[in-house]
Image (cartoon, rainbow, N blue to C red; front, side, top):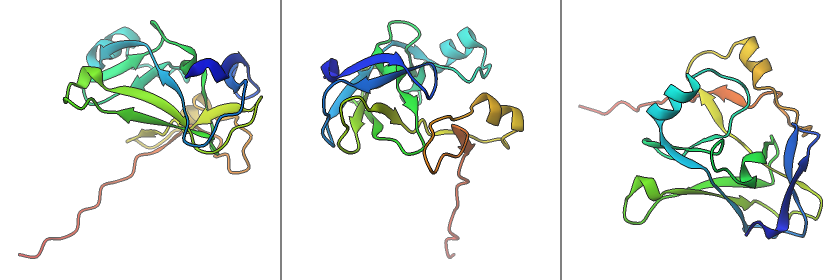
Length: 163
C-alpha cells in the first residue's frame, strides 16, 4: 500500500508525503497508524492545548489514533484546501470500536512527485479567534486556500414536526 509514497520536506508545512509512482483515483494509499487511545487519555496527555501541530486522528466517539506513538508515514500528510486524497474511517463489521481504522485514498489520479494532501476537516464549536486562525494557518497554496485548517462547526437544524 505505502510502497508508492515517501516522506520528505514540504513547501506546505515542514514534512510531507509525496508520490514515488503514479497513484490511481480510488486507490488506497496508506492506513493511518498509531497507538489507539481513548479521548480521555489523549486529553490527559496533551492537556487539550492547541499547538497547531498534532498527530491525533479522531477515530470514533471512544477512540483516537495517536500517531505520536507508533505512527507511520501517514502522519506526515498535510492539509490541503484542494486535496488529492481523502481520509475514510472504516468501521469494524463486528461493531468493535477498537478495530475501526483510517485509510487515505486518492480522490483523483496523482502523478509521480506530487504531494499528497487531504482536508483535515477540523471544526470547532466556539467562534474562531484570530490567534486560532494563525495557529492553524494553512499554507497549501491552492487557489481556493482559506488560509486556515479550521472552520466553524455547522449548526444542526431541525425541521418543525407538525403536531
